[in-house]
Image 1 (cartoon, rainbow, N blue to C red):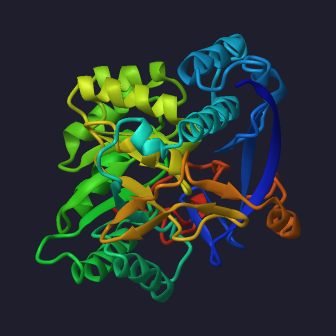
Image 2: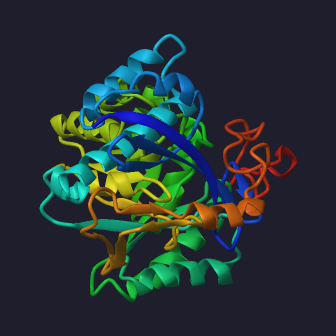
Length: 393
């Protein structure tokens, strides 16, 4: 079997409501979803959700190769891009191709990827993550009720701009999930997407911890700030979770070696091989791993095969337009199916019909860091502008 070509597609995830975080909001609820399809001479194709940036250059590393040599081809792609730096969107392109290659390998073996990788239990524990910062209280409760209805007993909300508001919202989601927790306490997490300084993080979380049991605080400071993460971890009770925006094993190494992270995260867009390597590094330090992503099918399969998987993020209960995934959610967990490969199928006709929904890549959203992020006192409400800043904690 040989790799013969690729196709790139862009679909849209229609949330049906505003989604975002402390950095920004997709007001229309429409988010671009790039897809890479890898083709072979035996008619098997693999699917990876992720960027197309510099794909011609990256694909040259694997063209004509046997797609089943996945980990060796992953390293070929890294070597192909090392001068420019295998980071950011280019690392995402590598991750999308890597995921597609694992899909092909498992399809060729006639097995779901979770079984090919050595998983035993197809159930992957999940937590709710609504990207909810722009919702009013009624909408917020309704979103988390939908998660509770499928048995989720842990939730992560977006925040970081108003400590009193975040405390109130954490209380709301706690009360919603408590109905499904069967006598146990819901797990509550707060994700602030790198919006604080070190001291702000400690003050803010300490204020929340006066009345709440917070399981973890996510990305409290900039992703590369090893000393900052360690300082935050020493100053609060909650665990520190980070890593979703780190591209490459070497970027995780410094945080883990310094004891600056408690929950090691990786994003689905960076690929399966990256996750497996980060999970092994974390396991060597007795740390759990937790995958991140809107449609993290590849990492869900991989999570079944590592000993230190803790819980995986569950964002929307529906996949992007034109994408179907062989899994379902019940009793607080993803349940993976038996389809060979990832179980991801792409309906290109449906995607073409919805092309008018795909937003402009230059449109605003949570991918653009605000000018004052990390340089403001805690703002009142969701307004990040400096003139509304007040000291809340």
